[in-house]
Amino acid sequence: MPNSEKILIVEDESTILRVLGTILTANGYQVITAENGHQALTMASSHCPDLILLDLGLPGIDGLEVIEKLRQWSGIPILVVSARDQEDEKVRAFDLGADDYITKPFGTSELLARIRAARRHANQLAAERAMVSSSYEYKDFKIDFERRTVTVSGKEIHLTQNEYKIVERLARQPGRVLTYTTLLHDIWGPYKGDDNQILRVNMANIRRKIELNPAEPHYILTENGVGYRMADGE
Ligand code: CA
Image (cartoon, rainbow, N blue to C red; front, top):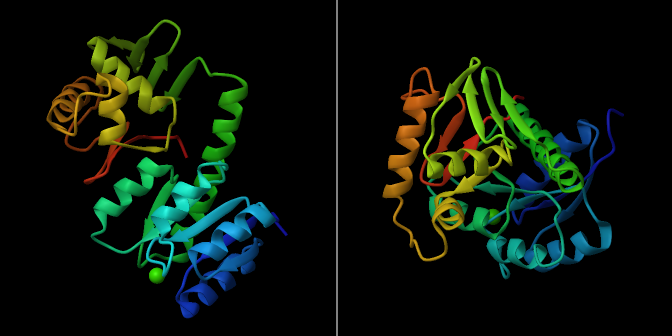
């Protein structure tokens, strides 16, 4: 067995639950399952899974509430399974502490990749808590957090203070989606409200400075309607 990580699948449709369980078991994961929110919370606390694959549309306690309750005591990585065109729910899921999402329908390889990525991010976070890293590097793009410098192919890029703050905030958690609300709150403070315009303007300027082609960004990626994520050198 390549690994024996334990995954809790939370899904109320038994057919989907069975298919997901079969796929994950075949790929060496231990699988435990829950068919509603109550069960999910009980299983999470009694079995301490390494990751939770969580369908948002559940009877009773819905997926968002499960995330909210879990995050009161646990940092278990949560990979949300959402239907198409549920952007509001995705945003709320991230704000409540979900780690990533995957949109139905998805293929096996995408699912496995997302699970590996979510596990890796969780490990990175744990490592970061133990030792805050001093730099971020992805291909030709580099940030030195101590000197507060950004370079592309060795050439220093001049960012404004807010531009730098945005880039640093994203690079501190590479691969992780940060929502517009989170970024607005963290850069401009709690009273900025939900107007994304100022963030979009700053992002456009950042991309003009760091990306070879700002229309096809490689370093800071857009999650449409949700937020941004920094590439994580997978
Ligand atoms: Ca469902």
